[in-house]
Amino acid sequence: MSSRQAVHPSRCRGEWDPYIDDFATKIPEFMDYLFSNVEGWPGITSPDVKEFIVKYQIPAEAWFVAHPNLTVAEGHRLKRQEAAVQRFLSDLN
Image 1 (tube, rainbow, N blue to C red):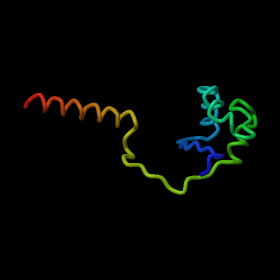
Image 2: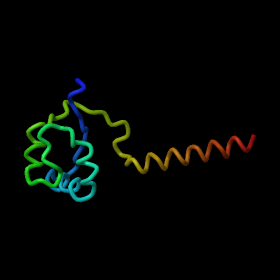
Image 3: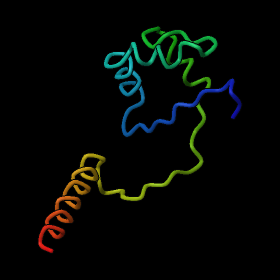
Image 4: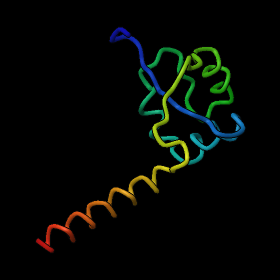
C-alpha cells in the first residue's frame, strides 16, 4: 500500500445499510475527519456515500478470530480477572 492509499478495515455483522447509517448518525464528524483527504469523498451524510464506499471496497480474502465465542468486552473482563487473581496469588506469598 502506498502513502496515497487509505484503509478502513471493518466487519459488519448484519445488514449493510443500517451499519453504514450508524457511522453517519453516531460519528459523522469523525468519519469525515478520517476520509476528508480521500479524493471524491462525498461526506458521510451525503446520499452518494454508500455508492462511493461500494465502488472502492475490497472484500477480505480471509481473517483470523482467536476467540470466536468472546466479545471484546468479555475479553477485557477476563484480562482484569486474571490480573486480580495474579495479584491475589502474589500477595499470598
